[in-house]
Image 1 (cartoon, rainbow, N blue to C red):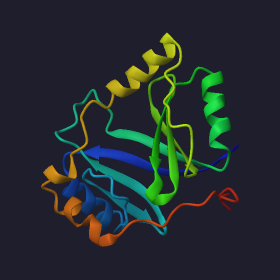
Image 2: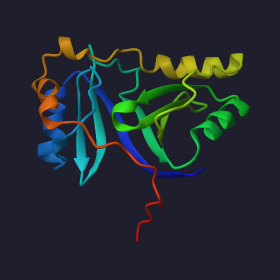
Image 3: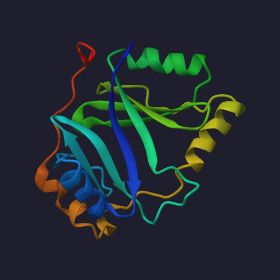
Image 4: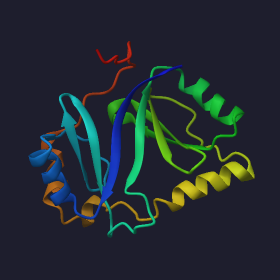
Amino acid sequence: MAMFWLDHVNIRTAKLDEMSQFYENILGLPRGKRPSFGIGGAWHYCGKQAVVHLVESTKKIKTEEAQIEHFALRSNGSIKSFQKKMRDTDTPYQVSPLTEINMIQVNVFDPDGNKIEVQFASSAADREPFGGSAAARRRMRKGEALNMTKAMPLAKSKSKVAKTNKKLGVPKPIKPPKKRFVPS
């Protein structure tokens, strides 16, 4: 199994409309298709790749919390082998299926508590989380504590951006990558 590329960065914000306008109008990353998560947010694209995922938070993020909620890597390997490796190395993880786009996300926490999403093109997987040893569970709790502010339910969002995502549609289902991106 190999990691093929950095897929995106996920940023939490209480200013979804303002942030979305910044990424679109200032940095030139247009807003585009996004799965129906049921929470407020926006995806901004660089070419065909959604590189910035904004998630609307229920309140302003505290300074001691992480605003970059996670970064994501795309993998081409077996999700079962990856999960086995995480269990064998006492690395806690959580599983989030996104069947709408043929993706399984395995969220792991590094030793500092940073959350890393590893994506697999898959429609079936072991969906049980793995907490690991007491030390591994402490690491997971540390990472979760960095992200205490909850995402805004779409039904409660006042953001124009969040309310108009449905018009943009849903991305196509993902496929396993065939080759790594190698800069020239």
